[in-house]
Image (tube, rainbow, N blue to C red; front, side, top):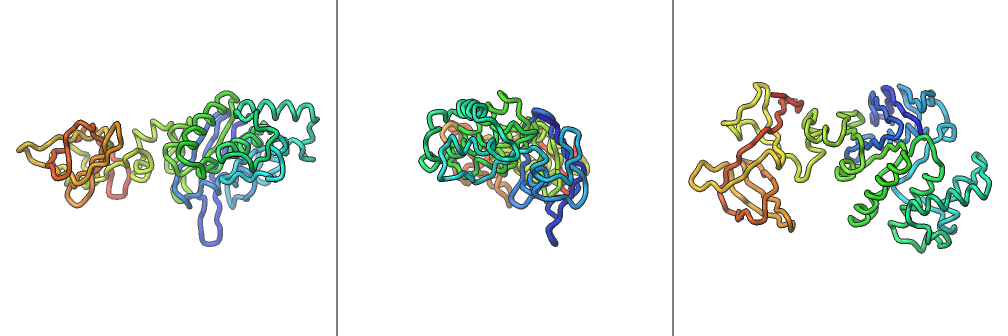
Length: 338
């Protein structure tokens, strides 16, 4: 495995600036996740690392070697796409073996068989090797797609939202499996997703990308607790961070430049007003089993936080909202620190 570095990389498609001045280092053995909405530039970044696109500016290095102008075959990368991209007429074994039978990487059949068996065992599909891939479930097909990359032992694995087409239960199962596999292999992975749960659970580091620019990079905990701006703060957290005008909390001490208060569920304590000055009124309660999402009308906006199912609060109740260590942002959306 090898360190991969992007140095001020930019890529434009016509009038659209897909990636702009992006610098990122994926250290050897790291699991780095790029998080952002559709159109943020995540997949383009992967394609630039893979050599499927050429940057307009900047450079890319793998294991210290400049590969900016190298073809995909010269870069020694493996790509796992959002769709399975399997060969339906082949068995699971032959799909896994396919990269090793390429003329570019001729491998003796005994070695192929050993590698395929090892990867199939790692992915827990060893009992499916003789089956056609069309006979597999969606989760099993995605394991085959991932396995076809794993048999290669490349410098870096590039993964483009490989779990997004699966149902919620399978996504949760494969997240755990993928993290386990990465740890066992010590693999270097650059993974892109729009799903904050995948970013938080999979990544050793998370890069939040906005309009082709890297807004912030850090550990999942760092990015969640110490966001650089409103955009980053809004990308992580469930329920999403509440953003209220400074005037909604007149008694709260705040920096002079703060115009917006950011309150996650752990920042807010909501209690029944009971004759005290009410901050808002409960409009809706989402019952989620072990916890509730409490919706409070706060001025002109909806304030959402978690509540204990035994809190006794319900629609129509007047409540007081007390904030502890909230986040503050300027008029331009940048973080203002106390």
